[in-house]
Image (cartoon, rainbow over all chains, first blue to last red; front, top):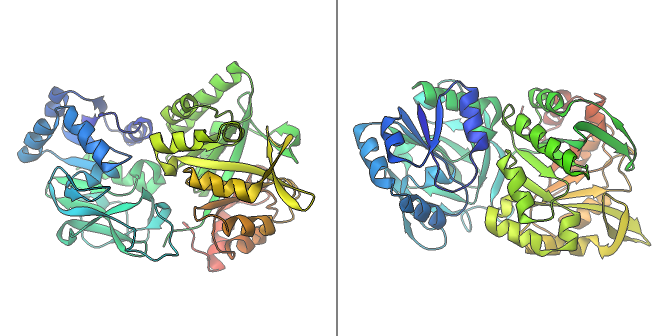
Length: 202
Length: 251
């Protein structure tokens, strides 16, 4: 069973639908016991970092997530959920993340050309820089759907795939059993479904 | 680099896809769920659903259709029609919509844009505008294009973005249904006013119209209905053609 953490950030309809579509057994939960029972954990998220990390901590689940991650249970974050996996974010202030992946989340503002719109919204191509179980069904040049104004930096060693948007943006990251995508696999058509399938099988 | 988007639009009334010519003479085309599946396979980059039903029953049927689409099709979905309150945002987002398109509701109450943007993020709020030339200037029309508000379209676009709209759909009533190409004069004028993605709507009749559109700065997406519904232009062929023309597409 894949436990999808419900901490009141965004709606989970498309994510749970897409996971079920690729054959995964999904449970949306905010119960610690479900995270312990799960084979894998999914951390979704949209919105602002501060609001999300506060809401996640308020559920009291972080300790359990820490324990399960230490035991080696696969954890995948998407979009803001991926950003929460890092040490720090500089979105409207300075906020501590979960610290599972080395690096910090920074704004695109001032780091990309003035001709590019912020946030990046749309389909962009992946460049796979490292082999990983998540990318076993996809290849470089495949397009996925991004919606974000901030991105992970100083995380070269954990970067699996990147995309170009005025700056090289880490699109898929992994550190041990913890992984994440900056884009929305549940909105990325067949390529996104292939990534979710790979995660659910691994 | 980010790709240009091809967006088929499905107007839904009483559970069926419809498409009017100049907003009149609406006729049935097909089942929305089947049509959405077909467009997904064809390579549509996004789907737009407009609920043009007025009745409560029709609205419920629309929500059910949306849920069914979102459970089977995993590309971005934009939903509009009858969005007047934050509760309307909530209703369609829960069914799997990614962006909510506001039109008459935002004209009535412009704070709807900032309320939506504040709660769900700028990227979630799409300002859709129906524009027609009146006495040499661009006017905003409300209620599905039936009522001239007298508002200046370029000023409304600027205000909408300032209030938090993350994207603008510009539908030209002058070119809509005519199939003589997008209203580039209007689109260029809007692009000069705002720095958010612009979705061009109204007037696409052939593949070349899209190529011409994307050669203009600031145009991110081309939206059309009838030429796709009636299979006069296939999305797959269109994207291959545009790609060969040097326009960055998701193939």
